[in-house]
Structures are given as C-alpha cells and as structure tokens.
Length: 271
Image (tube, rainbow, N blue to C red):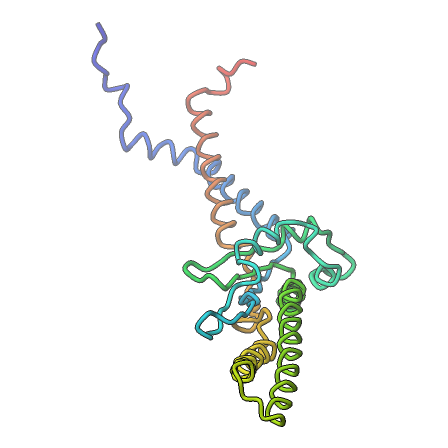
C-alpha cells in the first residue's frame, strides 16, 4: 500500500522561485544565445520581395446559335497552374528575366519559384506570385512570366483564329458567287425560286461574314487584370518571428538544462 506524499515530496511556489533564482543565468544565457543565433541566421538569409500578376485567360470566341458571342477559355486556370509546375514550360526569356546578375536559373528552379493559384469562384483568372532579391527584380520576373503566358496562349489561339479565317474566306467566296448569279438573273429578268433562294442566302451570308469579321477584330488574348504589383517591404525572412522563435527556443532549452542539472546533480551522472 502506497504511503501518502510527505511534505518534502511536494513542490511549492517557494521551490519554483528558488529553482529560477538558482538557474536564471543558464536560462537567460541560452535564451540570449538563441536570439543571437536567430540574428546570425537573419544576416545570412537574403531578403525576399514578392510581386504578383493577376491575369485573365485568353478567350476563344465563336458565334452562338442565336447570334450571340460565346467565350471560352483557351485553357483553364487549373491547367495553367499545373503547366507552370513543369520545368519545360518556361522559356529562356522568362528564365533570364527572373535571374539575378551572375546567377542564372534553371527550369527546375523556375517551377519551384513560381506560385500560381486561382481565386475562388472566378473561372477566368489566375494569380502568379514570385519572390526575388529586390522589388525591381520581382516585378521584372512577374512581367516576364505574364508575357510568356500571353505568347503561349496566343499560340493556342492561333488554330482557332485560323479556322475562323478559313470559314470567313469560304463565306466570302460563296457570297461573291451568289452576287454574280443574282446580278445575271436580274439582267435576264429571271425571278424564279432559285433567284429568290440565292438572294435570301446572300443576306444570310452578309450577316455571317459581318459577325466573323467582328470576332476576328476583337483582341481576346491573355491580359493583366491589374498592373503587376511588387511590395516594397520584404516578405521573407520574417525578422520578428525568427527572433522570437530563437529566443523562446533558447529559453526552453536553458530551462531543460537547468532541470536536468537539478534532478541529476553532476556528481551523480554516470557515462
């Protein structure tokens, strides 16, 4: 049967104060050492500045059944985000624009550098963030990435626009043929069913040609939703957070060392 704890087994406030008075040098010393280590790490860690580019996807345009213009992303933001995770997606120009003087980047480094996301409930916009050593370099990098994406999506748009142009040429050729037929029929006084059908088709062709020409005249390439923004304040490393973590970690370590010394006096330690 276990005996009840005696008065000597209990730890009271006086014991805690006595312990802290005895060990405060170790605790504060290691706390200061942790803070100094954090300062050293901050001094050795390059500052990082962040720039953000928010862009709208390029749009493929077509004419709907009721004559309305239908828009569709040439690629979804989710697909773009996945594509930017691949080193092969980055052009030499984009890599050069993000590289620091005398320190070129690789495609693998770019894939790890670029942070891409898509705002919730917005299906046509993607946000690109990059961190570099100066605000100017971060801004240059973000602008270069946008230009890279714009040109890549322009290439994806080209087959669609070429198809529209081919359709337009076919309609124009048919229109020219119909006009020639209608003109000859009117001169000959032939106003039969074929003439009326060709005349009605001419009106329809004019409408279709006008819609296609308006579509081709519209510039639906990728565009910036807002100008590229580079924060003038560094985003990493976070000085206050690292200093607090270093000092607090040192204090905890010092407290543990003091407890070990208290519970296991040096004379009783055996190796």
